[in-house]
View 1 (tube, helix red, strand yellow):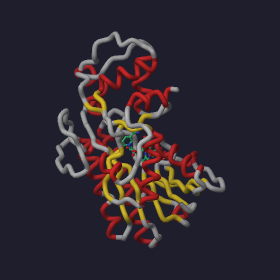
View 2 (view 1 turned 90 degrees about the vertical axis):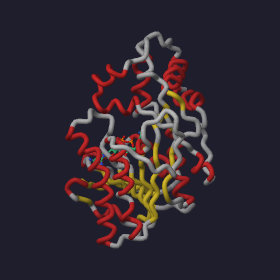
View 3 (view 1 turned 135 degrees about the horizontal axis):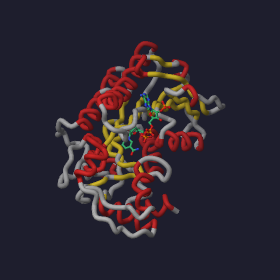
View 4 (view 1 turned 180 degrees about the vertical axis):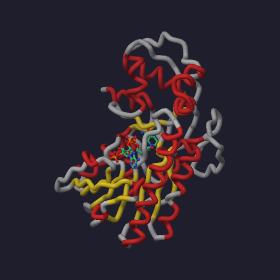
Length: 304
Ligand SMILES: NC(=O)c1ccc[n+]([C@@H]2O[C@H](COP(=O)([O-])OP(=O)(O)OC[C@H]3O[C@@H](n4cnc5c(N)ncnc54)[C@H](OP(=O)(O)O)[C@@H]3O)[C@@H](O)[C@H]2O)c1
């Protein structure tokens, strides 16, 4: 594929950093939008631009030479869900997309596609369902409403003739950031235990596969909604056991009961306790080949 200039939002985060690395390695130029002025770098192929979706502020120079946008921006859901945090979790996502949209519309920037992060949190908590992208049901939970609005904010791009793609990302496994180091820490200190009953499904993806999946969608110009999870989700107890095995630590404690998680995490315990068994067939049928199909080799690779 010819080298191109890509605009990335949320480029300073876990997924963003890995995606930037891949884009630069294959010779692309990266423009990125950041809300932190301290994070603005200007190198030949890697240029930062300031924005603040809350204030409708954006440096329009970021669009120069850009046809495709990777949208990853959003304030972290791994914080206590106070009223203020909830507002920020939702509005950081919807306002970011609204600002990109109004900028493209007003200035007629020739953007052809926006490939956006979404999340498997769009699927209701269920121990029995096996979710593919056609599933339409929902419930009144905070996570569901956030992800629905987030994906809904992509729709207006279509009337501008911009192709939209939403990648419903599962739990991203990375050694340095995100869920894995948080799950590993107590296990390392002989304090590991499954969360809740432990039978909740966790649909995960290795960070390298997620980056490859974003690039695959770009190269194949795939449109629509795709689950971005490995084909073999596991139950929470299995995840905990496999991490303990890799770390060569015993799991001696009983499961952490739900009431303790409620006390520790409040409403945000949903992240640990919800069950979403999510299907990867649609992206596989589009031709994507996962390097990490099963959890054990994925963990082996990450922890090597
Ligand atoms: N990691 C996962 O397991 C996972 C799972 C499912 C979905 N996702 C979604 O995938 C996306 C990327 O995930 P990630 O793990 O890389 O997230 P992350 O590490 O938290 O990074 C997200 C980035 O969003 C930007 N951001 C934060 N608050 C913002 C705000 N108020 N307005 C605009 N931008 C803001 C930040 O960039 P600046 O500080 O440079 O502005 C930050 O680096 C997120 O939207 C996340 O919800 C992640």
